Image (cartoon, rainbow, N blue to C red; front, top):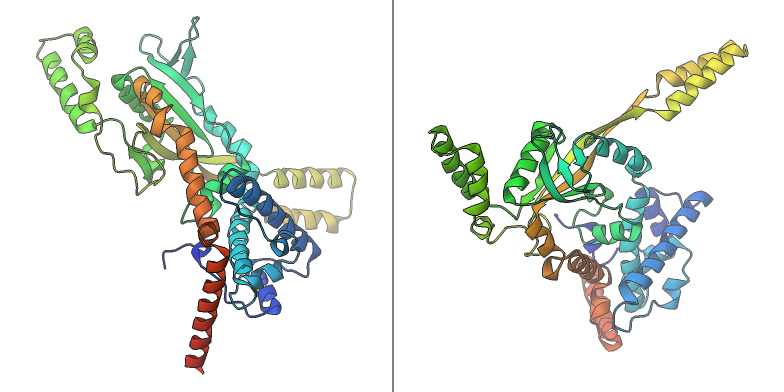
Length: 405
């Protein structure tokens, strides 16, 4: 319990016929040519991914065995995942390919991806009217031109390509497409700490971010010690309330007296959320959910068809049939779609672009985990060790069968 199915070392499938039944319970009918074609395409895509992403860039001299490369029968592949079925090396490769195929099938069958562009459009509409660019190309957050929050950088994250999403899932215990929360994302880089906090407050105040729709387990702060910062600001505000300093002096002191290093989080606890987020990465990150709503295009087409049939005086029976389908069709599509926001100050942004905290290092860490998880023992075992492992495994299976009989 608690482990992903792709961490299972083998499948106890006793025959090709049993493998076909397994595939049917998984969700595909092997006797259906369309299902066969879909599965084989997914398998070929998996072979290409393993070769190009997990083998070619690395020094280990791995080679996908010919029976695995040329396999066109997914039932056979499932059967080979049983250690009793074939040579140990083939069994290890069959398991590796099934891990990748399983993940690809979850990506290919994610219905939300069909509405990705609509979700993206609606989410970015939340920021409409809240970003201002002046004549010098400087960007600000806000609507009141007398109280704008200066931004050093504003970035809409690029859509992840298929391989990036595949690698992301292959290193996650929850190996489904629903585990990807940052397909849509925004990065805001404020000039300093104070403006970073002001930007977060503005997002909440204007309901660009609805606090109740923030995913608590997907939120983390590796940048700013908010407690220490709050104490510092409260002291200044008390002086302001007592008439000792003005608002202008508060702003001056946050720039002159404020020591950034005093307010950084020293040892952020981030491993529980994402083990590949490197220790040098500094940001306030949170995942929000946007309720995507739009007219169901199927409902619209059926309504137009019904109107056309009425105009052309089609059979009343056919019109009633269309009307019956319309009544059972949702008029509006509604679902929550996640999007990520990263907030940081300029110094953190510069630091995050280089060294251990860089995006490249983060991606490499993900890739190495995915590679180890997929290829497993194939990375470390010699041909002789694979043979010896085959013999030991066969002996254990024989002993287990004898004990049960």
